[in-house]
Length: 242
Image 1: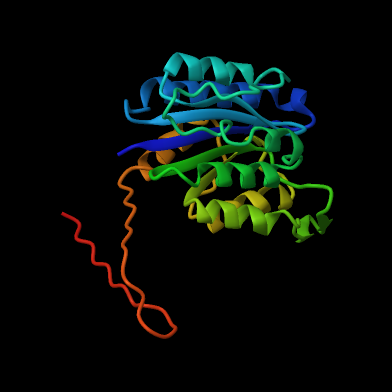
Image 2: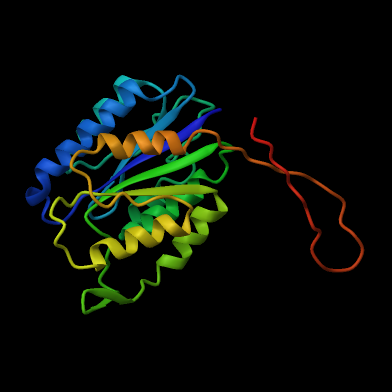
């Protein structure tokens, strides 16, 4: 029953304007870590400004995670080497150079996380706090993104291959916003079987719902000998809810 959470703070360029909202989100995450994480849960803490930065690799050490959440308030460099215990899955252990060289957009950062999480055989959730995801290559008309980023599809493929669910949580407090600020976040949630939390007076209710949604997860796999010829083999799965 292990669960792996990645708490992802997408820091807006005008960070000062959202200082209070980011602080409230950090408090919500620390409360989740302290009160809702199970002994078998693991979490990592990352942020994005000009690139992806990892402040804690996977651990169930609550104090380490809470310090990492506080560290996201500063524009530091993040970790350069994994601080995960030996034998614990890691974001940084395999290829940390990619984090510096290939995560200039949030899309690329999520793609890298998908690739790094793929070997983990457990529930994997990314909780993405953001004011909206738009990169310079996207065109906006009448408040909507009309030319999706070239990084979008590779990101979704990586997340789906890894069986990662993304739960975007909007940092915006004012409901009077152009549609594009919600458009991509909602799309990412839908394409990864997640849920978008659009309006958040505080962040505790969203995190409680994510905790609830991440329970009762089953990963089914099977092996069989290939039949002669081409084509798919039909598999029937029956689930009984006791």
